[in-house]
Image (cartoon, rainbow, N blue to C red; front, side, top):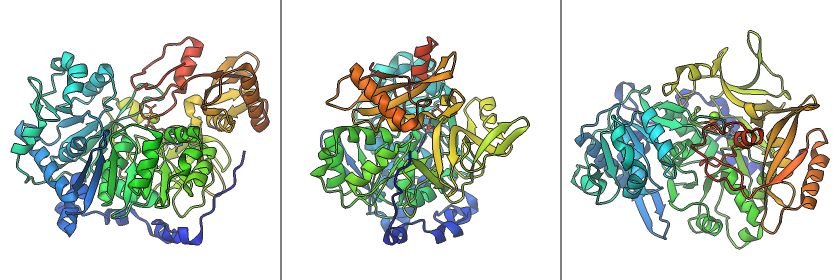
Length: 579
Ligand code: ATP
Ligand code: MG
């Protein structure tokens, strides 16, 4: 299936931050020059994201516009952030915490959480974000794996999910509760902040000092705790500028929750390092709220995810028609494959396409992207950012070989960029297995075309082999959602005596459509026409929703395990799941 290329005008290309000349001239040294640094090579993310802007005369500029669930608004300048994060760092110190200690964040998208993340880094401590919607078990496992010294959360979350076993985590010395009151053996953040000094000398961390622990989404199995260092900020600065078009003063909205890596790297650090004016929305997805926010707050750059885009598509173009999105200049998507239909839909509704980009918790920052100056090939993830060498490789007996254009293989990266993980917590063997022959293996399958664009095929575990064909679930799912009734699709392979494997699909329907045998036949018919009989699903099952992780990724392995009567494995990050 090929879709028309969306070409960029000469004016659009010229307006891009990553022109061909900039791409050519790029070195990691030029990226470093976007930052301040401290004497003797010390580097601290919080300084780069906050304090240096105050020092250069931008203390009064708006850093964050926070939109509360119930319509509250709070504006924080870079100066406000500087003093609040200093106070937070002092609170941590006053409770005996030291540089290198681990502070976990567990709250909804409220300003104190953002202050805590940056204040922790300022104090030279390690910040680790958790999803506030996680249940007690996933929280406990992560606090244990990360050997948490401190936790910042809310009274309600603490009572419901933590209090019962808090004493069983011996490392946990301090629990800070957002607000003015706290349960016994916790500390209320409000009074502690008020009593703390607003002067704090940012700890002179080394570039290789750990800064962040990020747990992976758990899509393919037990989540891993990736360790990131302060040097990652070099990537955050460059990727924000070049892949997301973040420039000083840009009105920016990243709809990802800081509970996962996108919401931290590109929902806190990268935008602030690039001195934007960012919006934080406390509420979850709501169609009218989102359209209203984009329009009213005059969002210029918007970073979101395929799952949200598909929800918008589900509501139809008409729902967007009454809004004015003319101020939007760049939209990007990450987290899952972005179906070509969604790219084209975005182009029609917003007047510009969604720019897909690819990266992982492990890579710490965007690796492959459709940038503003590039023509968009719907369905493609784009090309590697400058400084990033990506390849397609296949395993051979004594190592790896590189695949030529057009051949499917594993997506691999040459290690050496600043935001690469430095370890998986307590899992050295699993970490080491990621590196072969000088490549980092991503676990994703992809293809590169002659123009250097990369195309996602599927997770290595999800590839289907049927009658001699290699079938990527993404291709089949994209064909299925072209059917007007289909909102979302997940495809797996099931063992079959003659074909080896056959394709089975699960779909969620758009409003106004009801499951029926006729509809099933019709959807299969369309898939056969687009993909051919060998690749099209044999069976299509209707579901209310597809099983997804908290970060919005479809968990195909769960559908498959159930189908085969196998154990479900780690489902600590499972969010929605209605049959
Ligand atoms: P786990 O590693 O625990 O199984 P996960 O891989 O889903 O979970 P993340 O690091 O949050 O955890 O997600 C990275 C993965 O998301 C990538 O390896 C890829 O499979 C998928 N992904 C991210 N962006 C894209 C994209 N633009 N197109 C296709 N897939 C993407
Ligand atoms: Mg992964």
